[in-house]
Image 1 (cartoon, rainbow, N blue to C red):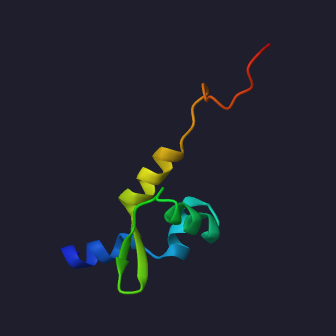
Image 2: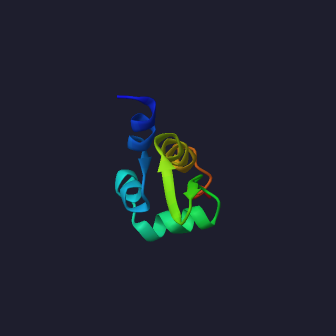
Length: 73
C-alpha cells in the first residue's frame, strides 16, 4: 500500500466516524461545533482521522473519581 492509499484509507466521513465512535451523527456534529473534536475540511467534505477520533475518546473518558458523583452528607 502506498502512502496516498494509506492516508485515504485512514480518513472517515461523518457517518463513518460516528459509527466508529458508537455515537449518533448529530452528537458528532455537536461535538465538532463545540470544538471538542478536531477535523479536516476538504472543499465541502468534513473528514476525521483515526488519531482525531482517538483523541476525542480520550477527552471523553471519565474515571471513578469524577466530580459529578454525589457527595456524601
